[in-house]
Length: 25
Image 1 (tube, one colour):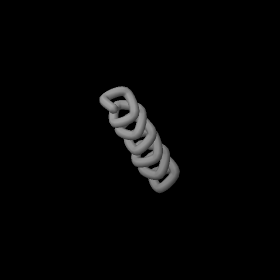
Image 2 (cartoon, helix red, strand yellow):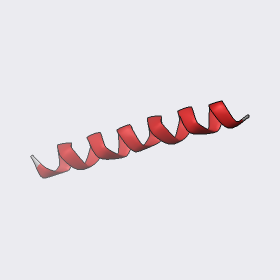
Image 3 (spheres, one colour):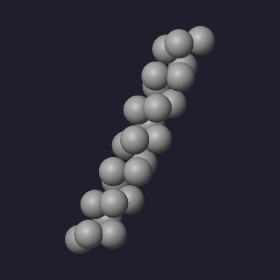
């Protein structure tokens, strides 16, 4: 289940970056 972990990591990073950008704007 390496691909699943990779996808989860990308999804989490996307969420984190999105929330950061939202808090900055």
